Picture (cartoon, rainbow, N blue to C red):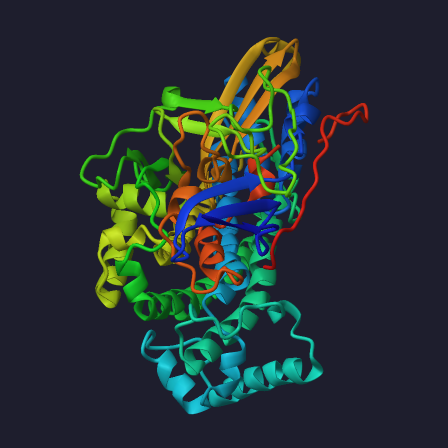
Length: 556
């Protein structure tokens, strides 16, 4: 067996290290995913006023700020039994939906696309053929003009001539894993550049109701504070206009690009490349009309789509036997092997800061794929037509989504139907205001609330299931805990030896060139890793709680 170390994994949020063991045929036989930095936000939250939890928990991550902000505030509201006004719920959802759209588009184009697109190859593209290629996947392709493609090609050529590829530097250009034609590469790179503008604009939609982004500040215990924005027709119109522009890009670029990718990589999809163990978890949420929810809750085991178990929070456990904590669940780092590799020889060796959550004793995959599969199989009419249309256009089956490419497909489908139904939320808000319902905060007397209580919340956020739990004593936070989507997906093996989704999805992957492990990166990026959320060293008194070091063993 030969061990390959990739550290750090780039184009993600946070610090991720992966070690894979390959046989003589370069096929991955074992994998270890390691969160390399413990941040300790839960420690910082101890002894704080519960009403401040959102502002601090929002700093868990620089990408998922709104998700953690809302999670913390909602957990406190649950602890105190506070109900928030409908308008506040809608505005929180509008911020969340805009974040879904932003996160998914940015992930594909700026964090994942270069695993599929050979930038250098795009320089050889024929402009006219590129335009024709775009029409295969959309009746009205986004910015599909010869002039536009000429500009993109010239921009790339200037990068190359200057010897400064910028974001395209250090790629594995010419790798055997790249399967797209020069024209397909140019088409996708043109959308990569357009997505940079998209990213800026969609962020404004979050900021309209959030005050700013990242780290919005309008969500408070009891409701929201952005009342003036809600009552200002101009601000509502700004939000609608941004979402309409976003929908155009999603419908004419993002979704067609995913069809292109699914067709080009169909052989890899049918082989099940990047498939994990088939255990999927979704907690559902986001009310639209009556009992309708954007996502359904449910649990799938072993790709058995015909049996969907209802989500039960009491089945969740979290262990630390192979994570860097002691028996008291306190941070306790153990060093690497002498050669700089992770200590993984025995089933008790610790190798990650990430804890090991389990559902009914099993590792689970969470995220857009889990939401799509659960919602589709439970007959969610909001999503079914989007899935059926994509599968028909690409001649794929539902099981094909449980792959590296499939995770991206699920993300794109999810973005498309969020763009479609987000306007229903706006309409509900306008209707409430029209009939003089302008309440945005539920008044309460903090001094009369319970001194000792506890609460928690489960939310679906862009990367998957997020949960926040708070224990309050004498109106101060005594304990705080977060289980983020990446905690589920990147879980270490623990004593049970069960691989998490990251590790399981890598088993059986064949590397064309072990010195350039693009295949490994492609699988991992499909999960949209966010290690800053997954591992939570900072002591408020300035005391070191642990030390760590990183040693790079091979090129990336």
